Length: 363
Image 1 (tube, rainbow, N blue to C red):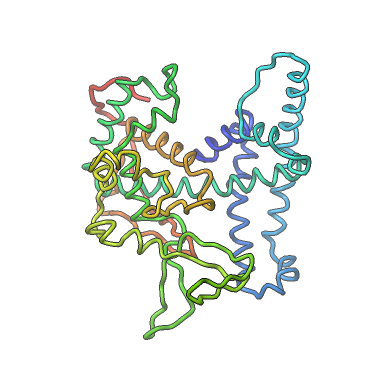
Image 2 (cartoon, rainbow, N blue to C red):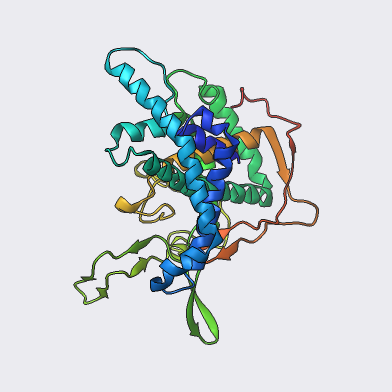
């Protein structure tokens, strides 16, 4: 719910982030779509038009889209009125949101209410659950390695003391402020390497020596048309091409002693030489870091997601204490098709932080 509210504030504005109907819709849409998709993949594609009508989740999805249209429509109309007033020279204050940017740059079809509301639902799908999963994994890793908590808190205190609170100093935007949390960025990268959100281990239906062959695939690409490479390798249209990202990121040549959880792995790489200073960051799509894809197909919202994660984790760290209940330890992730999910039954103990460092004001 916290991620849903933050995302709604940026995407649609203050009214939406306080609208329980929209917040619940943005969370439920992802769940319903995943269920419908999972059921459909159990059948051959030619049966989809028949099977789809028999899935209850399909009708819940239609209800979600209808509700989204009812909520997004007035927001779009309000922006159109503002745009008209501005066109005749009237100064009008308006909240800056992604919706407004999309409307200003969209064509006639994209500015239809039904089209725009559907896009907002799908952006929520891509933004909420993956981000909340990543933050959950970071908290699990922090509790499993509590010695890093004071180190990260000291970094947050140092940045706050030198730059002021997040968003509290003119000329220092959130992007610049969060970029200074280099150790937190490195911890995030290691958590993503250890517990990738998507496409960690896909079960292939090929038996080899009485065991299912497991592969880790990310990113994936869908072949729109057939192509034959110079070496004769043929990719037919409709095929899905995937890359073994999990094993790539755990290659000892890229990550020495990959079985060890080393939160400063990326931090050390950045400071190994001046040429590396601007590399090895959580939001970068590099050959050695395919968490968010690569090239033109890289996740367009990766910097927004990293900013959200850093903002929330830094606030949680300075205001709360976390630990596992007595006798409990780091829960294993659960694999569901290509998804890797935190154990939904896992629990953490949390309380307001009792002792704070003597650093500057915190965010």
